[in-house]
Length: 64
Ligand SMILES: [Zn+2]
Image (cartoon, rainbow, N blue to C red; front, side):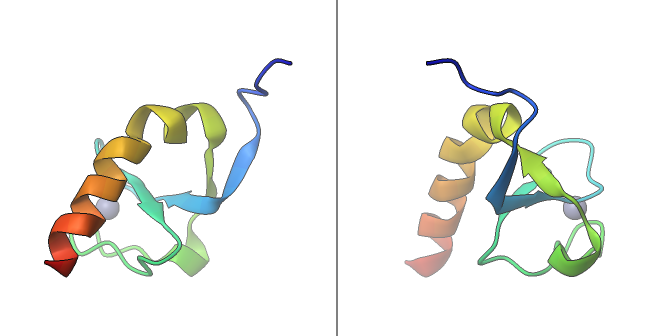
């Protein structure tokens, strides 16, 4: 089974930042570039897999 690298992930979206631009759906707004989840596209699965660890760690740190 191969991963479709161009598939979009419904759980994540991209903001306009040059790096760390993948946000989970729980984050509705990027405070760095000011874009919102509603107006931005879904993230690609292959990019999410590269970044999701960092995204999850970031959310975890925000909760504690
Ligand atoms: Zn941003």
